[in-house]
Every structure is written in structure tokens, then in C-alpha cells.
Length: 156
Image (cartoon, rainbow, N blue to C red; front, side, top):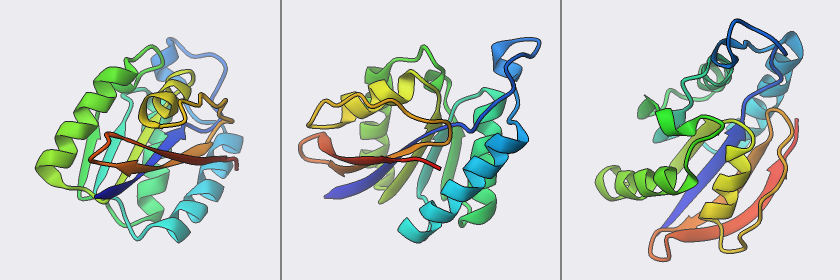
């Protein structure tokens, strides 16, 4: 079985806030996310599973995506999707979710450097691309191999 796995970096965010977790999207970041949300809408009818970082800028990015694309079947804030999160833990969680929920389209919304490490973790090619803000990577994930083929990173 093949799963469509999309890994997205949040849009451009304020450089400063009371803490890194509280940084919000800028107007540029909102525009970037909206542009790539339109592209995502052409790729999928909706997401069966969306996992998002607890940080404000990622939550805002996710909301903009979900406002345009059909509401996901399952939307979760996932604490391992923070910048210093573990790609292995995310991979294990996704594999477990595939077994229980059998999603066809999955979206992860996170941060650099984790998004690059996630592509490396999930892809056969073991590639670790640099993501622009609001960039989206696509992986055609083979459930049997527990790895997939990396397509590209879509910039806004």
C-alpha cells in the first residue's frame, strides 16, 4: 500500500517573541502558506491525518491549510514535531497510525531542521533537503518497506 506523505515547514515567522514557541506568522508567511495550500489542494482532496507542532507558527500554518482543504479526518498536535524533535519517533508514530487508521494522505507541519531530517528518515534516497519557509516535500511512502521515494520540495 502506498501513502501520500507531505512534510511542510511553517510559513515565515516573526524573528522575535517572548519565546520561540510563541513566534507568529508574518503577512509574508501567511501569503506563502496560502500559495502552497492552493498547490496542495490540487494534489489531494483532503487529509486523513494531519500532525502539527505545538508552536504557534506551525499551528497557524496548519489552520490556513485546513481552512482551504477539507477538514482532516484526524488532526493532532504532536509534541515530537518541534525543531529538535526525533525523526525516528515521528516515523514510529506514523507507522503505528497507518496500521490503526489506514490513512491515504498524511500532512506533517513542523520546523527546520526537523523537516529535513524527516525527509531523510522517511525516504529511500536518504536525502536531507533544505526547506524554504512554507516549503512542502512529497514522499510516496510504501507501507511494506516503511520507506518511500522522495519527490521534491515545493517552494511557495
